[in-house]
Amino acid sequence: MKRISALVFSLILAAVTATAASQALGDQRELTEAVDKLCKTTGLRRVSALTLRESDHHGRILEVVLAAKQREMHYIIAFEWSGKVISFMPKNFDFGGVGLGYDTLPKGPEREMCIRITRPLGKRLGWKWVSGPLIQRVRDDFVVTYITMTEEEQTTLLHGPEVVFIHPYVSFLVTASGKVFGGFQGS
Image (cartoon, rainbow, N blue to C red; front, top):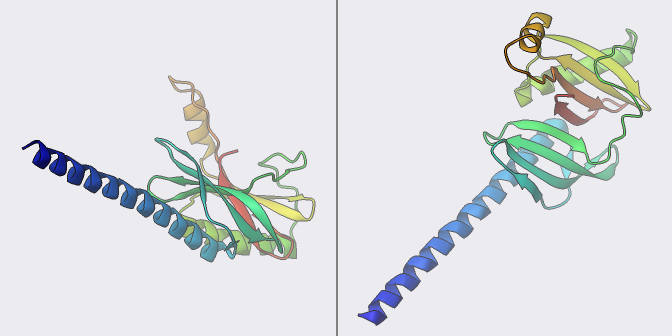
């Protein structure tokens, strides 16, 4: 009887271990597919395996090397648990002292290119906004920012019964040649 119990225990342990391993593999496969879909949507190219950096009640944060701007760069990508992209940013991107929410790029072909590139991409990512864009140059690139809440909504949140930190932006990083190489929600 002890032998049978030990055998049953071993089989159950093996089944549980195999199930846990297949779920972990499924998560890795799911994340890889989500990154590859993001790359297809943006024109970026994945050149490394994923490294999961964090996983909590908000979602998953991972690191991966992507080809962008004619070179390979380390990226940090954040997903909600639903699979929606929250951000995809070069790991050490330097904004060069530029803040979000300023509209310093005058009307012209560069501005029109930034709008033409980012509006459909935002829709494909499921990112929504109520106004914008606010576009500014960061060295040779552009930051294109859209506002996600009306002034009335922002005022209501800021003067409500609870302290609320709001980051009413979605932004894209765009090269001078018209390629999106980053995007994030918040500020």
